[in-house]
Each structure stands twice: as structure tokens, then as C-alpha cells.
Length: 100
Image (tube, rainbow, N blue to C red):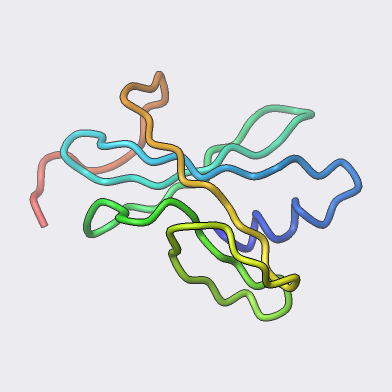
């Protein structure tokens, strides 16, 4: 999912990426929207626990990332805000019949 952000951030039509976070059917989900022409795609990842930081620091050169509380000054990194959503019309294809 973060590789998608790296790819889109290098485009000439780059839009500031945002990670969205929501609790969906008792699962913690982090997701992004991509695509402007031909439809929108949601890339998502099911987390083990709620994110406790406000940003992801993503290194453009290596692809390494860490969760951080504030925007830093590293010129090789992009800082992606994590936006918490209360409600969404998206439906994620997750198995809600099992508990992990």
C-alpha cells in the first residue's frame, strides 16, 4: 500500500496522499484511495491494533517507513497524515465470521 503512495507521489499530477483509518466490523483498517481516471481503487491493510501516531514517515529512497507523531525535516521522506474516519460508505471484503 505504501508503494502505491510512493508511485503516485512522484507523478506530475501528485496529490497529497492521505491514509484513512476506520474501525470496520471490529477490525482496524488503514486504507488509501487512488485513481482519478477510470475509477477509484481503495488499497487497504488490516491492522493488529489502532494506530497511535498521527503520521507515517515514508522514505522515498528506500521505502522504509515509521509511524511518527509530527512532520519531520528529512528531505528524503514524505509525511503522510493518518485521518480517522467515524463512518464510511466503503465496504471492505473481510471475513467477519472469524475472530483473530
